[in-house]
Length: 71
Image 1 (cartoon, rainbow, N blue to C red):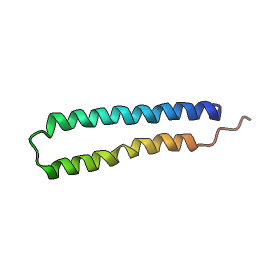
Image 2 (image 1 turned 90 degrees about the vertical axis):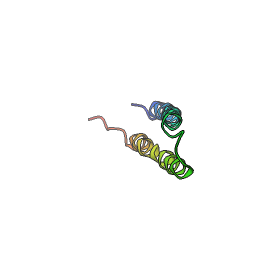
Image 3 (image 1 turned 45 degrees about the horizontal axis):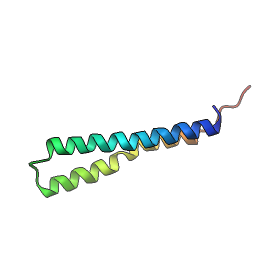
């Protein structure tokens, strides 16, 4: 796969990941945390704000892989 195409796909994947993850985290927060206290909100948004990094790291690691050499 050409490097430019791989970077384009990776960019779209990262943007989609952030948008979908933010929507899902917000929906979960509204549905489940409406009655919770401020510390629960703080911990939820702290953890959910850091958790998206794990799948993003996978995408970035895929982007950094060297292209296979043809034999």
